[in-house]
Amino acid sequence: MSVTQARPARVAFAVEQAWQLNPQVALRDESFGALAYHYGNRRLVFLKSRLLVELVSSLGEYPSAATAIAAVVPEGQHDAYRRALARLAASEVIDAR
Amino acid sequence: MPADSAPLPLQEQFSRGLDAPICLTWELTYACNLACVHCLSSSGRRDPNELTPAEARGIVDDMVDMKVFYVNVGGGEPMLRPDFFDLVSYAVDRRVGVKFSTNGTRLTADRARQLAALDYLDVQISIDGATAATNDVVRGEGSFAAARTAMDNLAAADFGPFKISVVVTRQNVEELDALAAIADSYGAQLRLTRLRPSGRAVDTWDALHPTAAQQRTLYHWLIERPGVLTGDSFFHLSALGEPLDGLNLCGAGRVVCLIDPIGDVYACPFVIDRQFLAGNVRDEGGFPSVWRDSALFTSLREPQSAGACASCGSFDACRGGCMAAKFFTGLPLDGPDPECVLGHGEAALAALDTRPQSELGHSKVGRDGTPIPVPTPVRVSFRSPARA
Image (cartoon, rainbow over all chains, first blue to last red; front, side, top):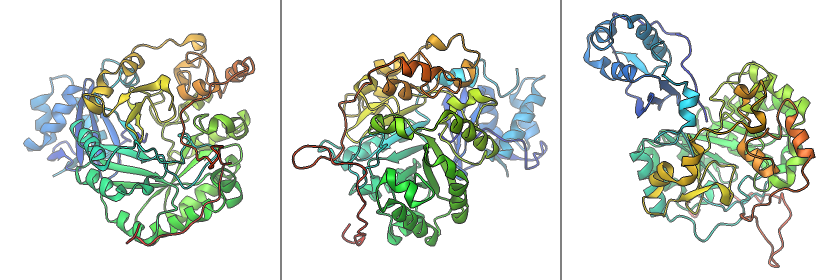
């Protein structure tokens, strides 16, 4: 199978910017989190926690990634989730809106 | 705990099975106009019990319900199925992507244009050498030229980056650079997969599988070329050093399975044998029920014994290798892979004197019932699409 892990960020991820789940990406819930499949670049990416799935799914409802993280992610884990979103931006699972 | 790591490593999660497959192979027909000597499904003759167009569409509906993102379509030669285009359109219209493998003999200029018009469709054309001389010994006289014509047709139709799929053999491993050059000349992606001793390759594996030295060459060649696709099939080579890109585990029955042309569901495309038959899509509950509840898949999702490999320092890298390769060479499933890079497989093979023969197969036979020698020459007679 063609499985590609998210590569290091090639496109700048700006946390103050507004983001959304890429419309070309479908999510499939799994016990560990979710599979994300990008119908354009045909990449399969793993979202390795339920919280990350929740964050990614709700990005579109917030004025910025930072406000989404503040609302969804517990204090103390913000940096880790910011890095996770940067990786997902690089693999085009999320895109700027 | 990093934000994107799970309580269990992902590999461990996958080995316990997912709610739906990631890598679902669907062979549409056993009919084939070629007779490759290493055909993993011993294809040739259409099976009279193959799924009807309505049944096939029902399987696509199941995939939609299970959120299967894409399906790998093969055969036999899938383009020989009369409803091939209807079925592919039905799937991609429902956002079930199709990645289909073909020998290219039916991929006319018109067909190429039809394929190019579909979203979510990938095509891979099989060749097993960079020259007709190397390829045709395995796939049949004329098959290399036919495949190249199909590639030309896809390029002319502006299909985009199709794939060229190669089973690595002792004979073509020296041609990897030349194969990469062919792919580059089309802007295509090269995809290399491992030869398994399945189907007709039960009889040809000894002569075709790469040597130990060639396996090391292949490993380093792949490490230097992360853009070359492998379908995760060379994870047994990961014991040679840093792991190859991919999941590096046997996904059979856990994240991988095969639906064959008559609806039988096997643990993976390389184990078409009763021992690895989980059920049939015509059974009550259909494919979803076979995937979720079959006794075979349930047992494959339980922790597996490392057996004779338990004391090997490389077990975490290769996980004991390929179940199909072991089964069809007669090796125990909890022992080393026949092509174990540390040589444990060769020693185990030397100690065997018999190999299992599968009673399943659809190889062509003559009127007297005797098998027709393989490979047979391909007769490339492009029928007009209007009548095809």
